[in-house]
Length: 404
Image (tube, rainbow, N blue to C red):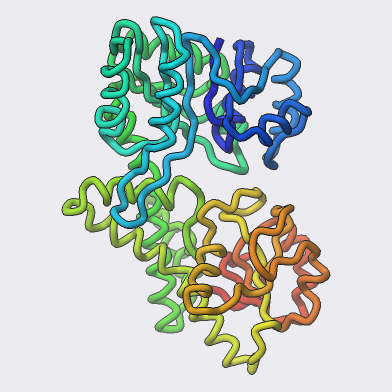
């Protein structure tokens, strides 16, 4: 039996996919309300294909509990935040999960950590826990790092078709874990050492962060000199070896906006480009605010109550608001003693910020300027509602709108 620890955006789809593929699975989470919802037959967030996968997993016998199970296979998928002061990983959730596993596991246990960690985290924090326990690494506990590699909005497809990396002390044990993942993963699965697996996951997201930062800096340059950044990117990308991404209002989510800081925290003297990229991307919400002030002045809009922000999530067509650029922008406003602007997001079903409204008609009522922070298909389908207002479109989805 496989006990999946942590049933959030990564753990729940992973547990469901394992169960639907014929594995005996129990999903565990300390959140009693979350487990209660799952046991009532309801999923806890929106994701294309998740409800169907949930029903298939239920038919195969998946169970959900607040308790760790007594077994010899664990997959840990708990959060790994970072310390915003020193930029280092905060491994507290992983440490606590491993400690509880050690209180329940059988001998000859496969302990698989999927949570993204900085290089050396397992050596620094996890090995000592096991060495201080009654178990022996490599004999009665086998450490594995199998970092997740899925994206909200396309999770089910990516679980099945994205390649995976498995890091292990013992390659034979790594092969055993590979066989577990092969029950649902149809892509290549590489087996390597643990530190390589740790590093490979972190640099994947760091690579993307740097590329986004280049696009965002390019947007600032083009805005300064009155050039069309999107036309320039389109023309440049005609070169066969150039692939510039689109700029945006910032970087959110729990991967790209977090993982590069792990490297900055651990290697501060060696991460100049990475640090600069992080600062560029973190500057974008304030850049949006600066542009909003400029647009309001140009359009003679003096009342902030006539300005609305569309989109609270960190990417289109998901309900995940972690590290979202809009929330970063609102935090910046609050630091300057200003209330968040009126906001709306069709994907966010609960009120999470002040001045958020839950109805699109109510949102549009009385507005003169709409700031599009997220390109949900909802706003594309309702773009005709924007004809009577000024639109500042940070996603370049509305024709004739003011863009980054």
